[in-house]
Length: 291
Image (cartoon, rainbow, N blue to C red; front, top):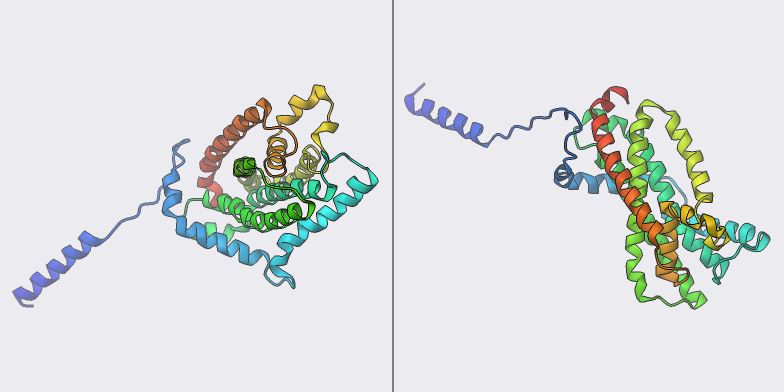
């Protein structure tokens, strides 16, 4: 081989060494950092998984995405017959269909986001065991996918407000804050339950019963006025109570603005979310060996 050829080979080798990027994947040690920046680096994967989640949910269904609005409408009719016509529960002066739908909308978002994120690691076991990516992406996608259903169902609620002659107030701008409280609660519960479900499958079954009980402890079908005054403060410590009350107050102009109990429950949700993220992060190193 000529001297010129050897020099070209050496220059090519040095060039490849200079441009090669090494990605070293190591298990996190201790409680460590949440490495939230890594989530931003994988934002394309979040978008892809989100799109796959929405498409897969309504695959091979005759009505497809129409179920997004049909399900809360059917629930509203059932609630109106049972709790509005038969039980005659108070509805803060609103037509009961509008009252129940405005409660079902944020509750259904919370219920789907919580149950989906609780089982997200098991349902994505094949993907998790083959490809590296931040595992926090999985429960985050489960919660974000519920926002699409919420947005579609919100259009129906706005149409009902027009039908019943309810006008929007400037407080409607605060509605995203109560939706964020609902999403943070769902993600906090989902992070804890997702990590626990991997090791104890019973947790997945228990979540179904817990959500049923939780719904009756939340003013979805009834007004908070039916709760005795001495229990009002304790009742409002439930974060979903504050979120649904705030949602109705912001959009429909009924009830009272958020009180101290709502702020306390918000702090509780933040603690639940942060501790859930650290617990999930700590257990993710052995998740692949179990799923």
